[in-house]
Length: 428
Image (cartoon, rainbow, N blue to C red; front, side, top):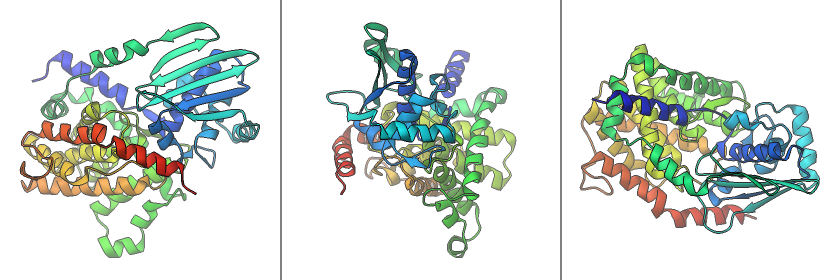
């Protein structure tokens, strides 16, 4: 049984990690850093220089920026300087207007922006911004988290320098989780303490439904809900799970000016942890309590796995997020702890190795694959069919299986990450 202190710490953790975000979180985090530097400067910068880790650069190159009809970093940086407000954090660009976009295009055309790859060792999530005006300079650095400022400076005055303390502070503030603790928390915490997670359902379902009315990215949601799809898969819970999950990603990656509920710094992870669970729950007539507990189980499991994987890696985040939603669906099917552990092992045996080659409209394909595998893994678990410890990276201990997954994504795929970025930056 969890203590009151543990419950409160976990609730605080979920509040920190499950937050609204507008647009892909990597270019938005860059815009946030630029907005902060502009605020320190006190004037519209004459020139902005950003230096980015390879993973930030990879995830920000090919994604639509909300409300602009444009792709990539330059317009995100320009709008961060022109209208960004750091107090909005991952909704930093929500005050953007059509007039601001036109000013942003001029800002880009005037060659005011410089984008560079950060040299030397740094966190996989690292953003540096220098803003210049009239002989003055402001610097802002985000590292380790999408909203984690670790260094602020105006001219020669250092306003914040927590480079050395940030890792220790993060470790000290991290709640120690396990699959058992996640499950027990989601199942036994008083319902009223968990109901805030329903905001994820409202935001992400609204994002999905906006895509059915428009034409974003590949419009995978329309393919999955079209006549040909019905001939192949029929009108089913499964097809609705895939189409709704893809739809929210279509809208988000296509630049829709609509917030989604993120998880661990990723909107796509928040979508994948939410919508398969929501659609399944609604389709089977789950109770209010079951909806809440399933969503909390899904989101907290994602947070737990991401603790050892890290914010960014060469492993597609949908692998982790779909593992969370598979747990939520397993619970809704009537499963307990043992079945949830089986579903996790089935997920890890199946999707490990799916690469992240940047944030982009085609991420909807990967989210649909993740959602599909989540349902399959849950169905197998409910029949007590589970990949055994004799196979691949699966261990008898489900937490060890998770650590095997995250060590591959965090450490084993580093060379894969470098090769992906090289391919992406050298295309003709």
